[in-house]
Amino acid sequence: MSQTNLRPRTYNQVLVPRRYTPGKRRFSIYWTWSYPWEANRDVAELDNRFSTMTEVRRVGWPKYETLEYSAKEFLQGIAGTLELFHLGLIRFQDAVGEITGHPVAVYQRIDQAGQKQQLAHGVLDDTDTLMVFGLDHLVTEQEAEPEEIEALRAFLAREGTCLILGPHHDVGCSIDMRQRAMEYAHHGDPLVPRQQRFGRYTRSLMEGLGVPVRNQYGLRPATIGGSTRLQPLSKVSDLDARGWLEGVSTFNFHQHLPHYAVTPDGQQQIHVLARQPIDMSTPHPFTEAGNREFNMFLWMPPVGDRAGDILLADSTIFTTLFGSDESLDRFWRNVATR
Image (cartoon, rainbow, N blue to C red; front, side, top):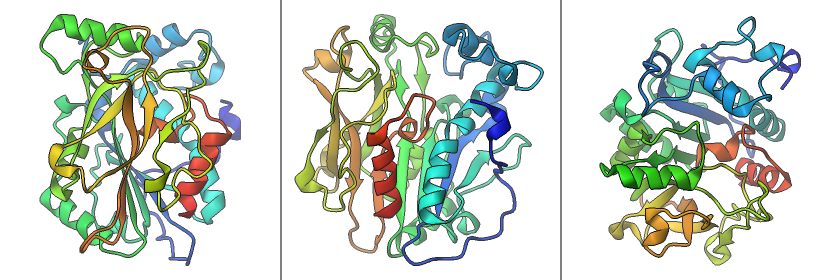
């Protein structure tokens, strides 16, 4: 990605509020991490941290062996890897901005300067679709405050709002080292440690809002002929009254995606609209239990005082770090226009 062609970027800045325009949604993205806490993790720790940029370069060689990713122009260490997530969103931001006529705002719970941005009315008042990307490691102890839960309840009471929740994978939750080794061999990504547990903040939001879903594991999706083209989604179109997946056959490939397990008491509230076939070439505890697909895209329609929609979809579906195609572009357009 040539950095000379990038548009000016801001996050956690004081922005001019976006005026409501009928039929034109205002998107906001909220990274749940504490940037300093993640970036300052001890790189001698094997588990529950992001890769350093050096590790990314080694595994992805020669993809990042260009000037724009060198120490002269790009952050190294864990901080550089965090910036890759921001860069991976640019195409989504540009596409949605063109469709809606509004810039896509980006917030971090705690940014590079240590400034904390809670999910409060200042963020939500000029937002119609809020995307919460749950890439905070559990060990960083991010929790939703009661006032954030209340602000989100008020947000979802507005007609036409949408909350997209994306708690990331939960790899290696077992204390059994053999199971952790099995999970690691299954997804096959050397950049993911044997234990990498994400999403404490997003889980606390879901608990506060009564979303009966839990992110589990990190499962490798099945592909076609050894490529990175995914096998088609198993869609339940008769439940998709909004048409979220109209014209969508696949998302993009990522080696370790969460299974969004619906709790027993939530079966009537959640529509599982798409499941992803699992790569069965190596075993995993989830497949050994008899599963061949995992829950990929879920919808919680409005009910009672909640006028807004709640969706569950992993953050990797909205970045180009892991590729994109026409099907993914169509999904982005559906989310931006429904």
